[in-house]
Length: 391
Image 1 (cartoon, rainbow, N blue to C red):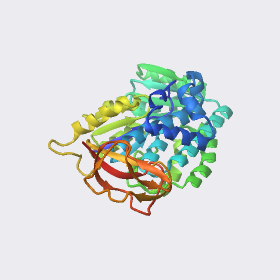
Image 2 (cartoon, rainbow, N blue to C red):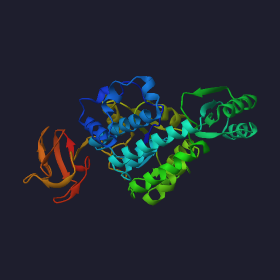
Image 3 (tube, one colour):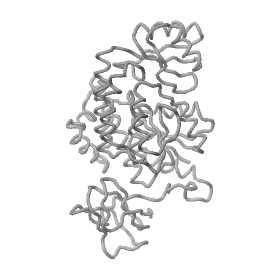
């Protein structure tokens, strides 16, 4: 079984969009710019590190970058059995699972980032990573500090993040060192995320989540709040708002996915922090980090290498190393091209049908396996239209 995992804020870096400019998936950037009413392309191409540190820029660019990689992976016909995302990455995971549309995800991320920025300005806080100390002792350090400081992230064994007031974090750091912590590493953030300091952001976000109305999904998403898999949209209204003031239970999420049978963890998006956490947490985990178009061939090879010997796919998954996916370029009613039958040879750029008046062209050469969308079906942008087997 394969899991797609998605990074959170802090993974962004200057110029991270440049490798994607000429890729078909870049069209997502234009859509995100229109929805967010911001020049997302400029942020992905030209913003410097200081500009990207702003929570409002960091969250939007990380989300869009992750969805660029997801879209490219979907075009290859690679689908996960389960998804999960770290903090902000949970919104990427929900979009990947189909619980949120892309435009809904962009709107929610923008509102979340703005709410967290304002909460941080009204109630200044900070965060620090505590390395080399077990979870319980980090929690004890926060309690013994007798101040406004809490555990914010359970990332991996020996890697826990604390957050709160600057004085509280400093006091907890002193106690943590007394208990045996190897290092206390301040994090360059603008607030005490995943703590009660974000209460005003949580209250503000609730209305936006209600408007988005997450849908039920065929692919479960493991939640930060409880480390359990959820596939019912109604549950996410409370999970997403609670996430802002609750610790991210990432280690627990990884163990839950392993218990579900996941052996492969593919991190989609900038950076590779989650890949390291999976290696440290799950014995025998196969991992890969996919951030650029050049990584896509590695992903296909990695997927093929993980398939049972003599099999073309993982059991129970639509995960074929030699298959490609044609997706809709627009929203509208789908009409297939007459005369195309299963097994037909398809060339790069060949028209497979129309969505309204927009042509659906194949980005790949191969044999048509089947149409996924049916004539007269109303489809959304990037919805799968047809499977091809590469030749």
